[in-house]
Image (cartoon, rainbow, N blue to C red; front, side, top):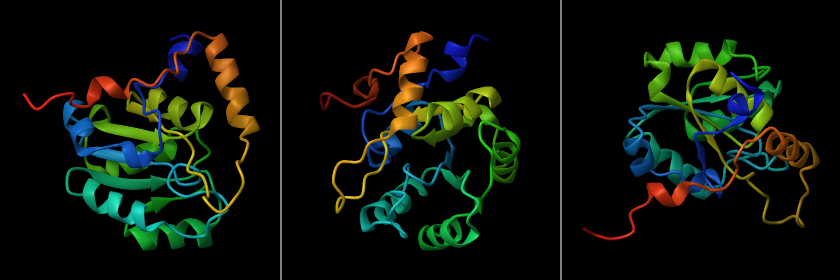
Length: 182
């Protein structure tokens, strides 16, 4: 498998995780989600989950098993967020290592093909999920609305490198949303 293929997300959401819907999961026969935390669910500058995220988690847990898997080593930070959303979690994942993703998948008791790895980073979240054969979903980073526009130099570098390797990062969400009521 080429580096470009290893970095290619199956779905580029073109927005934050809040745009991920039960209909998208159903379309791809996904029954589990492994969720990155920092910048995927919660801005790195925020110590807690937003009200909109709490509502999203409630909606998604109706249709899928959910686990948090973070590279962050802070038990305090990730534990507080996990408690707020009432989800199991693993820290210090060292993604793109597959070890903790496998652990979460085994706890879900689902085949990896029915689990999506959802994150904001190509070289950690997408690469780890693709290495395990999971469906991968790239989301835009969650931004703290009280802060000025934040730059993401590492993520921007990942995007440049991956595009040079042939990865397409055009949002392909529109093909998963209903255009009409027929």
